[in-house]
Length: 452
View 1: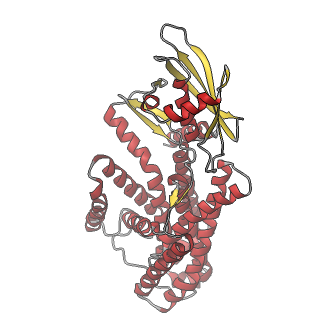
View 2 (view 1 turned 180 degrees about the vertical axis):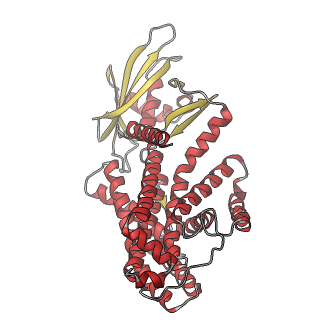
View 3 (view 1 turned 60 degrees about the vertical axis):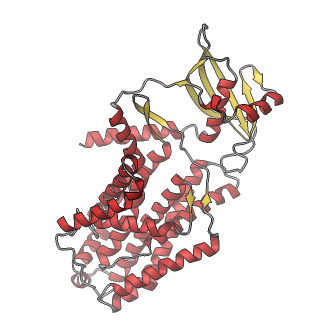
């Protein structure tokens, strides 16, 4: 089992390195690929395309390829395209120069190409031979593609469900504002990328790294403030959970309206990053692909899951958290500082929510002020399915919800997708009220006033 896991992880890392190593803008590469057919005679077959950065204009891409004209021998050729802007610039798709092994193309050729060929049916129908790929039955290939498509969605739900479970496990209460905390993390990720660009560092890898760090930190700060000034006082005074539910629901609305006033009702977008497809297998004419950003999301989520597992099984914090979750009063008598433990748990939950928001911002490329409501609801369902209060169950629940959403959207009527998820939750509660990893009797733990 460990060997299989290690091999799978090594394959994912190798694919990620292959996809991110060149750091080629996928949209710029797509435009440059359309120039290949325009530069060659009709009926030419193209294969063995290799993309790499190229110093031309503000940002360039070079594509080396093998061309086989009708009745002639194959020849190695290349085309290099220069663009007026870099990855995060509004002019990033403005083609300003094309160079081949024969020299630079004229301005007249470039004008004609952009005016009549680029984006035309002829360019879209250009046939490029794919390298030999492992063969799968078409149904298996399609199912594998849907499994890959579920990676990012499952990661978002798993990370956000973990935030719910962390707080519920120690307080027995649900923080309904976590969806908005993730939304704040998503805005922080977009803002981090804008900051990197403003500082003159137009580097997608650096932008993603800063986005993840800033989103996690910003969301952790908000989560800590909510825990200290909203949930902790109410939790200390009330044994029932309704005041906390009402307060966090109102806080969620307030945060949503705050971002609507600050950012407006328009969605915020960033260019797609590292989304060039990597072919994995083929079933008939259907090709199974994965993108480097999907691999990165999978690795980040896997790393977070392993870090959480180690934290809660091998560290003093995990021992204190589990002791306090089982019996707060006894844990306090044995030296556990409930106040510090709750504060640290809110920070940790905020980090998870911030990472979830960063995945939304970086992978999907758009955020808006209303995204937190549905996102938080789906993640809460994932936490309930996995067993609210169980960190391992939260990750499993996120995977289940992500797979159900993706599979239903691929095979059935997408308008019924949410109904299916809610129905699955109802059936699971009837069969196992505590969820997959929860207790058979999912009553909340004692309020634990002492030290909280």
